[in-house]
Amino acid sequence: MLPLNSLNQVLAARSDVREFYTECNQASIRLHKKVSDTLLKKGLYIRAPYIEISKEVDFVKKQNFLRGFLGEKRPLLVQEVSMLSHAINLNYLGKYLLMGFKQTARSRQVRAYIDWGINTASKIIDSFSTILNHENVPIPTYWDNMVTDSTVPPFSDKLIMFHLVMLNSGGALIYGSGLTNSFRHDITVELAEITASVINYFEDGVNIMIDNGWMEEPPRLVDRRELINKTEH
Image (cartoon, rainbow, N blue to C red):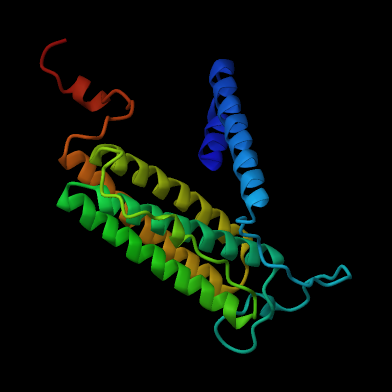
């Protein structure tokens, strides 16, 4: 939630609203620190790949810095490795969270939607892992041992769908940020296609929530045309 809360904090003008999102960010940071420290103590923390970087500052001199399809590709940038590894970790986590949701969801429509999400996460993991493998960069491990065999629903289908739509919003922000920090053409094209896929998945989730009467409409502007066309004033 840090990306979404940070965005909302920047967009807000009222001091009390900004203070609210400041506390949201601080709470998320405290939770992240607590979880990270616990994982480190238990030896379960999944670290980012260790890589060797150049020892000298250099400047880009040729246009093939952007090349990713034809000819020789340059080695990945550190920021590209970080983004790809982070995305793989997130999709592993999301995939197995969806597996847990699927075991407990009651609606066939919701289960089908979750299946789509699991398949999408698997494709993203495979795609980004292929890029890292080609560069001999270690692939982050998986989280499948987190899923139990329970079929008792801890959440309603409505709450599950709310979580999935929020996760999709966060995913779109991350992939959009990745587009601005990646320069190789093959990576940017892959990110653009994934972003479009995530947006389609998000839209389908919103449609399911609308169909079931689960989505509260956010505030909207007054329809001036409707006011003007009224017969009585």
